[in-house]
Image 1 (tube, helix red, strand yellow):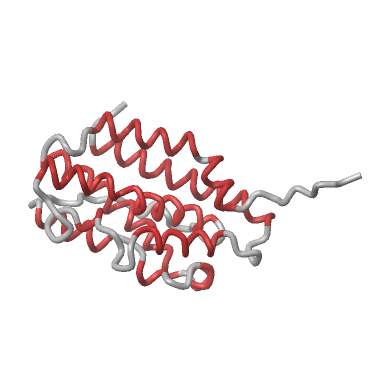
Image 2 (image 1 turned 180 degrees about the vertical axis):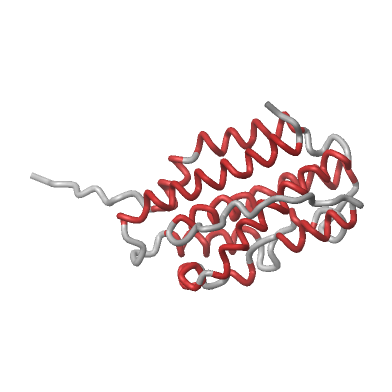
Length: 196
């Protein structure tokens, strides 16, 4: 008799599968917001992006996060979003940091959402170029690829997520962190675009 031992799902697989509905909700909110309909709309999107990235980069100061994701220095888009707002003559507005008090392993969930959005930003960058005439060097830095390329940096992040050193017992906390990060970005979009 053959017995098949099922391996536990990798954390990256669980994140993809178990946050799929939240990811789709972000797509729906973006469609309703129409951030590429005008530069004014796009500036609202960049302000939301800036505050979300600020939340994420706030986590970078924690040594345990730096241990878990040793290449943090190449990640994050807070400064890029702020430079884009300056290009657009727009203000970021005031927001409290939503990730205050977030620590490992929840922080990995926040990073997952941020890094996933970097991977998906290739499509947004194409729209911004075609519809608004902006680029990676003016107004759309926050959507640019990392110098090494989106896919390489994403795969490296996934390898950090799926290391055996992160015990299964911590996976739920990472999933909760991802849900909180999706919730934060959704809240920012709703407020900056006055969506219900």
